[in-house]
Amino acid sequence: MHRSFLRVAGGALPVALAAAVITVVTPAWADAGHDFIDEARLIYRVVTCGASEEPAATAATKPAAKPAAKPAAKPAAKLDRDARIIATHCRQQQTRVDRFRSRYGDRLEPVLSKWRPADLPAEVVYPFGGGDLVSALLTYPEARTITTISLEHAGDPRRVASLSGVRLRDALALYREAVAGLLRNHDSASENMRKVEGGPIPGQLSFFLQGLVALDYEPVSLRFFRLEPDGSLRYMDDDDIAELAGKRARKKGKNWVDTDHSVAFSNMELQFRRRGDPNAPVKVHRHVAYNLANDHFPGSALEKHLVAKGEIAAMTKAASYLLWSHYFSGIRSYLLEHMVFMVSDSTGIPPKLARRAGFEQIPLGRFTGPFLSLEMETRDEVTADFLALWEKMPKRPLRVRYGYPDQAGNWHMVITRPREPRASKARVAPTAQSAPAAQSAR
Image (cartoon, rainbow, N blue to C red; front, side, top):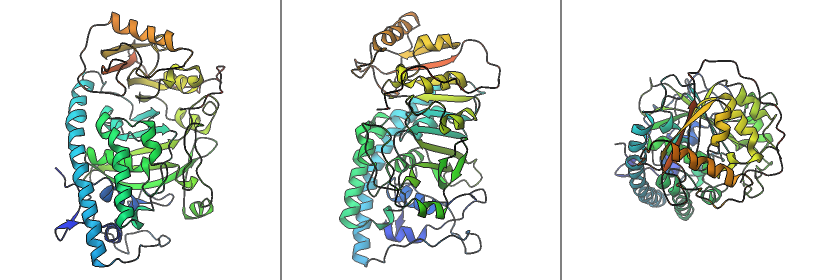
């Protein structure tokens, strides 16, 4: 088991000192946009309590970049105090991570390995997947590129280095409170993610890094990007970030919250590999802050970006049953047109629509009705369809929570796969949706 925090002279590495010593080699492939890997590794160590074994860079191997402001040196007494704060935080986090591994990671793989095809696409798309990279990695361990989409912005990674004393203690306490649901229930409630949409610790980025720690990965690159109109990615360089410094990232849904950081830090690309293995394959995770309702997604740059991926593996869970709604028919149509396999709870594709698109669904566990009290036009119809699905299929116990339980607390899962053996084919963009477009995500 890896250590939960760095040890230096018998204590945890304080934030300011860590910021001064974690300069690392930047891989040759990270040649577009500003790479915030130093900041990512600091968060990985201090906030999510990981450990990295990267070698120190030399002036000859580290690419030239505009110098970043460094925290002022602290007296030894303050460094010791910060070390104790970090040590206390990481002891608590380590207990949670260990429990997460035994109750989720160790139980989920035996279930999914029975159903997951060997020839799945390397691309995974996870709509409504805020903060939950860890579930994507557990669901699709062979994936090479994972795209999560949610209302939450990635967050500014530069603020953690300035934390000390009471501010450090309080920021870490708030983070523990916010991430508790992810480590306990394997997904994050909306109210918890709202708590860290602003502040010194970037919520989404830290949740994603927490997933790397739980599964023994380490970050090797962090960049931010925007989507161009044709769906391509434009990585943010120093000039872009400076230009957008005064433009705050605004909430993506009417019931959400504004951030207190620049819009430059909305969408992120995190590259990572197995911890301590420089020869391990590099995986890519991209998170896009976006409202997937019909008044935003159909015809958007994001839709073009996703369509360009071709065939994908899909997943969703704890998604507020939005895929049941006509107001989210655009993202639902995208999934039905491009996915070749999907794992979900009952917030996934409604059975009737899956059948029409040529899929079959295999229910696991037990379902007696939706977890949330829904005011949705399709609630009764889709609920009845799911109940019929469970009624007609063989009983298959499920001993791990995957997303929401049902209204009675039962754990359940839905495997969605083609009825007939698939043949790879070119995909076309969905046509414009005729369904209502007034409602926004969450």
